Length: 430
Image 1: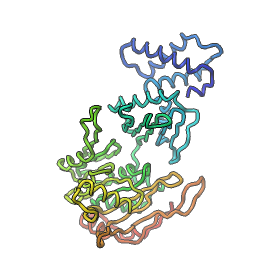
Image 2: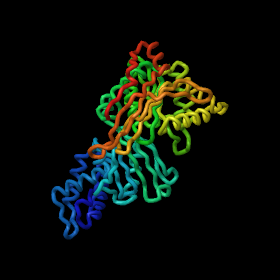
Image 3: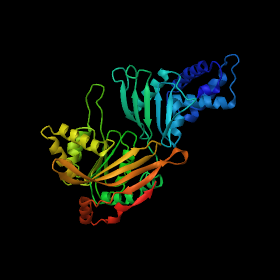
Image 4: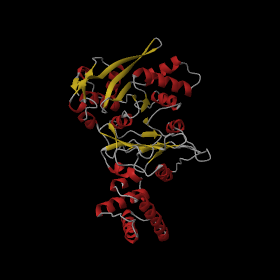
């Protein structure tokens, strides 16, 4: 932001102001807020002899002060992006290449950069200090969560070859709803009606998708269909779910400390959650041997539990689940794992980020059981792309495939939840 002033020697002035500012704040012996800090910066600027030929207009002085406040109290040049609710993700590829995602599309942010890699490292260090994590030579990668719930990943040299890397996936202040999914053409009204009935009727469900596809957002939407009287336990690496039910316990895993001790894994938390008398367990993402406990829970009185898996299609979803189950239970064969999945899981919902940056539920599958040594599935709904409209937006239809999901139908009837056979013949223009 300071470069926008376009004046010589501005970095020297900034450095001098920051040094004097640090001394004055240190002399105060207490924390200072943004208003007081701005006042101190103005006093420092007014008392300085600026380099010959350097004149700051009132507008330039205000921007100058705000940049220093952001460096001193917040997240440096990234703060305006964090304050912009329309931006969903921010990445810094080194100090001078900053990108932001807006409306599902990533673009470079011109005129915004850190002074140098050391400046970027200071912001990474500040994030780590705020959440009790570190990113240094002995631990050059960091996953963290900002106070507002935004997820952060940082990688520093020598692992990051071209300078430190920082990725921030912003936490949505407003929880998306089924209505939002429909209005944004992420799903059809009929698809959401079916999923609402299935979740209320305690059908166990797995959401699958790639990075940034919207898995957690969809998990949030589906969780809203769980009746309030049920006891829920959520388990995540970094808390992102925004459930509103009253009988809720939220658990978060913990990495090892600087001495390599104190780690609490997702697997350990799932095992402990089973002792907490949950009606359902919701795991933010299954990545390893916790899958065996999660899938077993779905068959032992915790039906209707939910989780996500990193996979782009149904075949990869099953492959990843099988591998995770066999990792957690060494005596299981691939066929054992498949039978457990077929017994425990009712639905697989696949969500994708499309070529135009929008997210859509790509397909919904019903797991009917086993046919020989293969998991039998029926595709209930799918998105059918049909081209591009104005502004390059992808167009198409959400289509029902005409299959009646027998296992889901029986479950809903047993639970007294409405089931409409016409759901699966719907077509909806997206």
